[in-house]
Length: 288
Image 1 (spheres, rainbow, N blue to C red):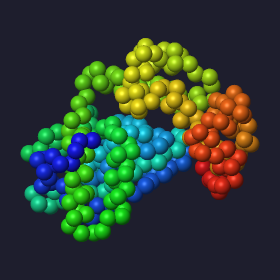
Image 2: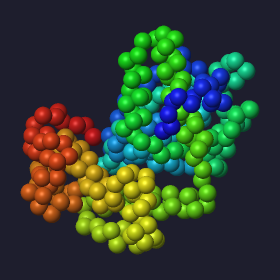
Image 3: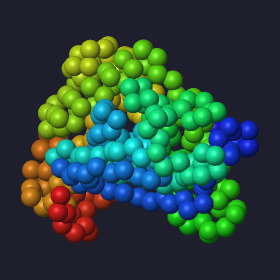
């Protein structure tokens, strides 16, 4: 994200109405469907952990860690998680003004094919971006604790202008689109085979790119390697299975691709700071 000190020069500064801004944390378990939603204001969704599929504008977009989605007012969107998956995301509602009034229907300003938004007198922006999750998440969470006064509204507006500027800078060349397609193909392959041994070479072959290129894509988008990303998916899945209590500890480990209970326990403790058994004891049964 760019520094907020230049936000005063943003062409969006007179468009964003931060009053009434709402932000919060939303979670979904596996095999859930939120149904069609159509908001009267603008929404920002930021993936924090796990993944889900957003169905909107005739397309499907994966909402995952580090991905930012801007949902213009009046656009229908449906969020679904596959069996065994989960999602944690941050959301933020806010208004944009057109001729001094909150814009409630943006259909004529949205390019559904390219997923861009072009409002009158303003540059086009992408509706999807990749961001530093930690930095933006902390800023969005502050929205919930700020008082409802002019200074808080100014703080909200500055952050939202930074988000819009970031989306404006997002460009999708044919090469970028192909790289995103390869990356998503690799991720879907990982998610569907968590209980299998997967090598980097096998994953790259499935995504139809070289192991070196695949590694660069993961580092550029997620600041981690493909195998570290796989480990995160496995541990997230293990956490859900532990809460469901359908399997014993060893079965959870094997179901998530760990070849031994010892390896599973060490990896889980590194991620969550406790053993799988302690985690299960401390958390109530999940209905997922």
